Amino acid sequence: MKTSNLKVQSLLLIFVMFFTIGSAIAQDKPNESAADLAKKLSNPIASLISVPFQNNTDVGIGAYNGSRNTLNFQPVIPISLSPKLNMITRVVLPIITQQDITAPGVKQTGLSDAVVSAFFSPAEAKNGLTWGVGPAILVPTATDNLLGTEKLGVGPTAVILKQANGWTYGALANQIWSVAGNEDRSDVNQMYVQPFLIYNWKSGAGVGGVFEITENWESNSTSVFFMPTVSGITKLGKQMVQLVIGPRIPISVPATGRPDFGVRALVSFVFPK
Image 1: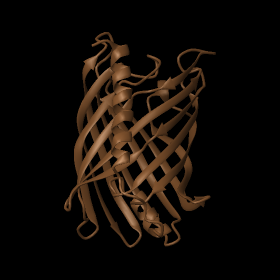
Image 2: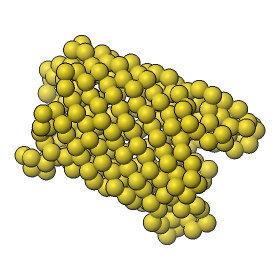
Image 3: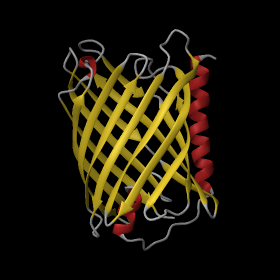
Image 4: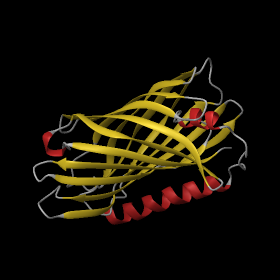
């Protein structure tokens, strides 16, 4: 499979899928409270249409004291399959600008590889506990070979969480193996785990903490970041949005890619069903 054809087909698949699904979604409810929205946004598999833009800035990376800015476009669209079953579709499409990472004075800008997930989940939580399982697909959308793997990958993904008395806690995970792509590039065999703990007040404001753990089985390397965050719900005109910000702290990262420090900021446009 040629890499250029794979990229074009993959991008078309992502955008056609989401525009098609989005056109079939019911209209918004106008009066959902900030507390309800904050609770749903703390749940990765809530029945809530949202379009988050998550920006991660890391500085002081590696031997050349490089910097990297990653803007993740992360639309989430729930689909009701039956009165008891939902499918929550999620895309993470990174847009990267990095400087002095691969060599001094060298810059790369463009798309990285996308991860498309679908979680099959009960429509109603039981005693605040809910879960979802499904496939995750690594899509080689990178526009620069230094920003992606040039591999198509697949594997399972799952999430489990509990919500009670303003608290949300749980974990999301996936494991992806490459199945096609450029044979000259390294295979993908990678696990991602994201434990999270969030508290939301009735105003919609919240505090939380998220770990992001990536295990690369091919290189036998582990990366761990911790993000403590503060968040709030507000309006931009008539549009409901969530704002999130906090430091991005490297806990255990290989020296070649370890930043001195980072910041995460997120703006999520919310469309209650």
